[in-house]
Image (cartoon, rainbow, N blue to C red):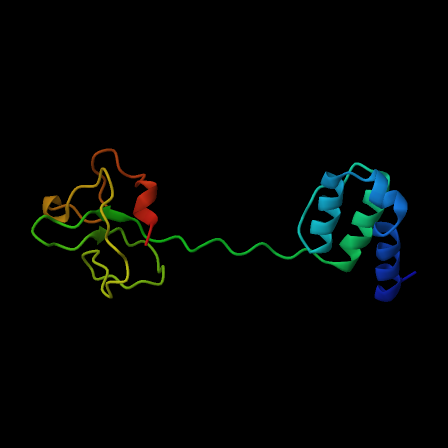
Length: 146
C-alpha cells in the first residue's frame, strides 16, 4: 500500500504538533527528528513518539548526499628558494592546476607558501620533486594546501 505525500505530511504534522510530543519528547530527540526532516542522516531517537515522527520524516525527506570531499592537491615538496626559485610540487595526478616538467605550478594560482620541514628549491641537489628526503614522504599536511 502506498501512502500519498500529503497523507505523510499530515501524519508528521499531527505527531510533532501533538501535546504529547511537545511535552514529553526531549530536545535531543526533537533535534534528531527536525534534522532528519531536513534530509540529514541522524540516529534513531530514543522516545517512541519521536521515533514515529523520525520514520515519517525519513519518508518525506530522502537523505541529502554529503558534499563531495575537496579535491586533493599534488603536494608541495620544496619551498621557494632563497634565490627566487619557485616552489616545487610532486605531480602524480591532474588536480586542476598546471605544472611544468620540473614540478613548478605554471599559472601561479597556488601560493607556494612556506611549509615547515621542506627544503628550499635551491637545495634540490639533483633530486626530482617527488624524490624522498628528510623522512618525506609522507609530505606535511600543509603541503596539500593551495
